[in-house]
Amino acid sequence: MVRITWNDGHVGDYPRKYLRGYCPCALCQGHEATTVRYIEVAGAEIEEIGAVGNYAIQFRWDDGHNTGIYTFEHLRSLCPCPECEK
Image (tube, rainbow, N blue to C red; front, top):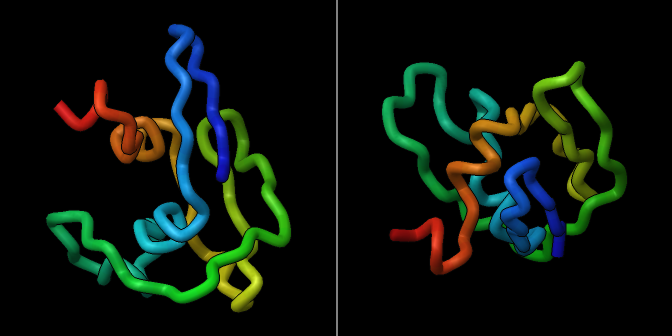
């Protein structure tokens, strides 16, 4: 689980499998994707988390995948909590 506490105090808990499935890279989403799609990936484990400037984070997954740059805006839009799903 990845927990993010946002500036407004909201806390989002993101399952690792959920984050890997919604990877925003062109390989996972397609080069001209207009809607975000979920890709099933078994056993997603995070090996490393790194900052990308002041606007995003990047995960390195145990399957070697590391090209997804998760902007803070994208992460907030993916928040799976009941409040955000409304």
